[in-house]
Amino acid sequence: MNSREKCIQLYERASKLMPGGVNSPVRAFKAIGGTPLFTKKATGAELIDVDGNIYIDYVGSWGPMILGHNFPDVVQAIEQTLRNGTSFGTSSENEVILAELVLEAFPSMEMVRFVNSGTEATMSAIRVARGYTKRNKIIKFNGCYHGHADGLLVKAGSGAATLGIPDSPGVPADYAKNTLVAEFNDISSVEQLFNEHGDDIAAVILEPVVGNMGVLIPKDGFLTFLRDITKRYRALLIFDEVMTGFRLSFGGAQQLYGIDPDLTCFGKVIGGGLPVGAYGGKRKIMELVAPSGPVYQAGTLSGNPLAMAAGIATIKAIKEYNIYPKINKYTETLCDGIKEILSGKLPFTINRVGSMFTVFFTDKEVFDWASAKSSDTSLFAKVYKGLLDNGVFFPPSQFEAAFVSFAHGETELDRTLTAFKNAVKQI
Ligand SMILES: *Cc1c(COP(=O)(O)O)cnc(C)c1O
Image (cartoon, rainbow, N blue to C red):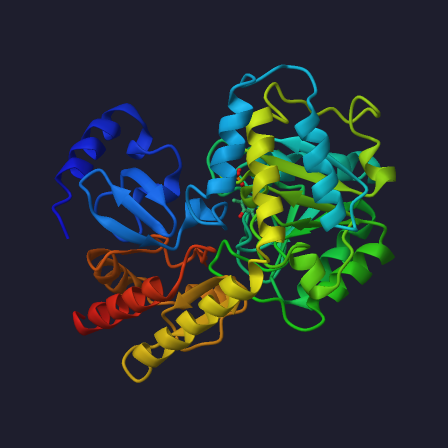
């Protein structure tokens, strides 16, 4: 490990210029202390910081880099597109191609609209759901993250299911009151909200496999129950697959669990590392979106040709190289290895679906916000520092998902497990 002198210097400069020295809070290492990484370069499964330290990367830009960094097909697609200009303010062929690829992969969707981030996707999907149902309230789950739009920055008060209380100053309570909060994997908390507010619930939005309180797996029947109850009350079911879309399978979590949602949101992988989001669903719902319908939503850079090119190249490569068996197997082997190292030494629970996983430092089963919160975050911070010092970069918070890419192989596996051994020894 080299010194982190340049990272420290940059962080000092950045802290005077940008809130917390970062442009997105998760980068700030607040949960574990220390200086955020300033990356100079990334290739394959590795990040290299400005001091020249090399890390095996399990953040993958928080999800998009499923092929690994600087994947040749993606780089080439961006380079070729770049020569024709960076933004046109008109339609271009790449939008049509990416739309075809996405709709082919997700049979629940008949139409799609591209936006620039996951936040925009969920915010817009909810607007469409409200426009379609002519109702105001939505249900979200305690601990699920759907971007930083006002009505979604709500988790819960105490108790199983309460009216929303905003998490952030600046979100009017008047607005947040339309967000109802249920507990993930808790059927009765959802039933209760429908009993009380059924006539005014426009949609239920969720991460079908949660990544944003660490990885949580839906219990048997939970997703089917949500599909049934939303149908019964004529509310829409919105799958936020910003993280899981093209990650858990080519058809996302909905393919894996066999659920047919009304609307689906994307981000991360579909942009291949460039800013893209999307939302889509049944034609009769999506036709409400402007200009074919009255629900307004627009974007100066939406469908940007470079971003579309990166998305197309990424999705094509995922298909062509059939990446899922490799990344899923790697993740399984890695989790087995971690289990062996931690067993009898530290309390832990590993949740994994496909190529996303979280090591929770608790011996309880983790299936909702409360059980996730039972993790020992100070123990997490200690192990985390050991891993970083041993050249392995995990998301710097207990409540995030780690991602494996197509570029992770035998060498990375060995180095990661050695780093785990060392990190545990140092505690
Ligand atoms: C990352 C994420 C978002 C927000 O996407 P941004 O592109 O960061 O705005 C929304 N929903 C889920 C499930 C996410 O993981």
